[in-house]
Amino acid sequence: MNINMTLLGQLIMFVIFVAVCMKYIWPPIVGALAARKQQIADGLAAAERGKHDLDLAAKRSAELLREAKEKAAEILAQGERLKIELLDQAKASAQEEAERIMVAARAEVGQEVSRARETLRNQVADLVVAGASKILQREVDAKAHADLLSALKQEL
Image 1 (cartoon, helix red, strand yellow):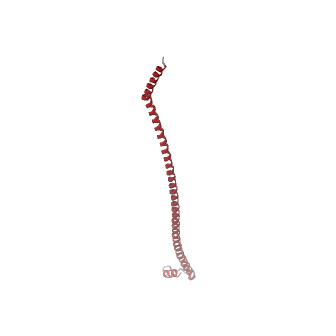
Image 2 (tube, rainbow, N blue to C red):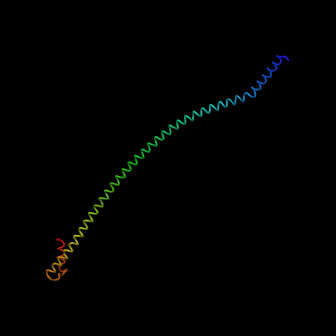
Image 3 (cartoon, helix red, strand yellow):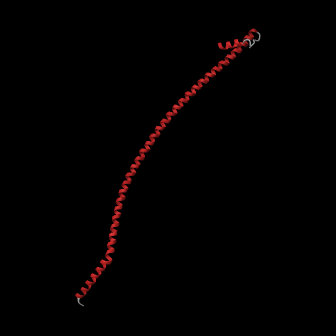
């Protein structure tokens, strides 16, 4: 065998092998590599978007937390104002009620004093009649002296 022929045969076989590999094997490998490259690029882009979204979410959550704290402080302040207002109203209402009770008590005391005076007048009139009766040693006619008793009541 001639080395040149063997070399030439091997060269032809190698060229055929390379052509077959270029036609049938190389495109799927290159496609798979391109797809993998694209998948990695998409993954990196998604990671960047995720990181960016995470930063935005952290900022948004901090903003929402600040707003919630402000709203809570506002609600607490409003509650304090309402508490003070209700206490003031309750104090005013209690003061009015106390004054009303005092006026009613004074009126009732006035009525009791009037009743006591009237009762005392009646008792004094009865005592006067009894005393006059004993002094005169006779019974004083109540009908005849009704004017005298009413005049006596008025004087007392």
